[in-house]
Structures are given as structure tokens and as C-alpha cells.
Image (tube, rainbow, N blue to C red):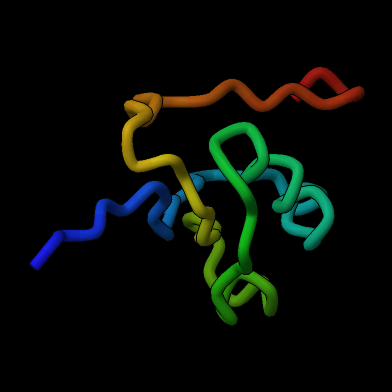
Length: 78
């Protein structure tokens, strides 16, 4: 029996201390696209009911190393 290899996997990413204006779905999607293919945000993130971090799911290539961090810079310089 031949084993299948996963080419991509969904993962959760935690984004601590994002400014409120970045908690909109389109902004979260743009941030997620820096790492992989954005899938969705968890319900607490979409409701802005958790201030300490946002959490999004992205699909990443299984063979590509994940970054330790990403830099998010807006037009406001934040």
C-alpha cells in the first residue's frame, strides 16, 4: 500500500496584540496570506471578544518552514 504525502496542511496562527482596526476579516485575510492561504478566523476573533490575540487558520505547504514571526505594517505605520 502506497502512502500519500501531504502537500499542504491547515494550521492555526495566533496574532498577539493586534490593533482593533486590523481585526476586520479582510485585514486578517491579508495577514494570513503572508504565511499561506487564509481559511477563516475563529469566532472569538470575529466578535472581537478576546483582546489579547486574534486567531486565524491558514493552509501552508507542508514542505516549507514556518516563519518565527511576521511584520505587519499599515499605512498608519503600526
